[in-house]
Length: 303
Ligand SMILES: Nc1ncnc2c1ncn2[C@@H]1O[C@H](COP(=O)(O)OP(=O)(O)OP(=O)(O)O)[C@@H](O)[C@H]1O
Image (tube, rainbow, N blue to C red; front, side, top):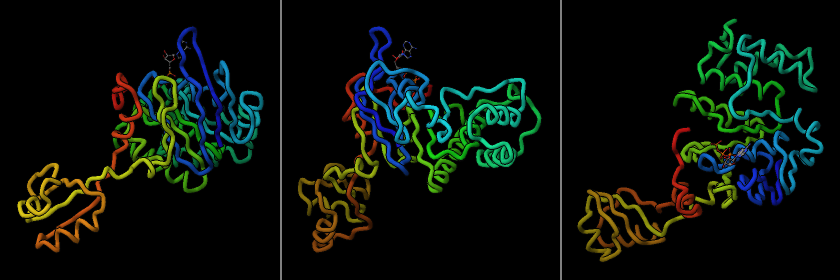
C-alpha cells in the first residue's frame, strides 16, 4: 500500500526525514510513532505529494508519488495538520464543496456519501452553524468525514486525535477499527504511545528523522524472561524459589524464569498455591525506549 525507499527530506541543514524505508501493507492499521519534531508530518506530506522529497522513492497503491499522484489521491482519504475548512460555511456545505472539487466523486451519490461520512464520525446531527463555531474536536471529526466521503482504500492521518477529549479519542479509535475491518488500510502518525498501542497492528518508530523500528505490534510484546505470580503463600514461594524472586508486593511476585507452566508445576509441587501466573511482556514503551537514543524522551507529551 505504501512503500518508501531511502526517502529523505532536508530543509537547509536540517534532515527532517532520513533514509526511511517504510512498508505499509494492505489491511494494516499502521502507527507511525515519534516525538514532536521527529519528522512525521514531513513524511506524511511527502506520501501525499504535498512536499517533494530531496531524494528517495515513494510508492502509494502501487504507483510512484508524486509522479502519478493524480491516480492515487481519489483512493486515499487524508487528514493532515488540522482540517482545512471554510470557516463561514456549514460542515455539510464544506463536504459538498470538497467532494465537488475532487476527481471521481460522483454527484448523484454525493448527498448520501456525505451523510454516511457524518454519521460515521458522530456528526450526523450538525445543523447549519458555520464551522467557525465548531469546537476543535468537531473540526477534527469534520476533517475525518472529509477523508471518508470517497470511501477510500487507504486512510492517511496525521495525528488524528489531536484536540479530542478522551471520549472523542475513543470514538475515533473505534471508527478506525471498524473501517479497517471493512477493508480500509489505516496509516496514522502519533506522538502518543498508548494511542498506537491500543489502535494499531503495526508500528513504525521514528527518531530524529530515522525509522528505527518497524514491526507487528504483537511481535514487539516479547517476553522479558520474568514471570508474574500471584499467590497467597508469597513467603513460602519466595523460600522455594530461592534467589529468583526479583520483587515482592503483597501476593504479587516477579520471578526470573522463562517458562510459566514449568514454574507453576514447581510451585504447586512444593505446596505453594498459585492464584494466577503469566509471562511478563515488554510494553511498547520499553521497546521504544530501547530503540530511541537519549534525548528522545518526549513521547507522550501533549502537543
Ligand atoms: N518547511 C520547513 N522548513 C524548515 N524546516 C522544517 C519545515 N518543516 C519541517 N521542518 C523541520 O523538520 C523537522 C521535522 O518536522 P516535522 O513537522 O516533520 O516533525 P513532526 O514529527 O511531524 O512533529 P510535529 O508533530 O511537531 O509536527 C523539524 O526539525 C522541523 O523544524
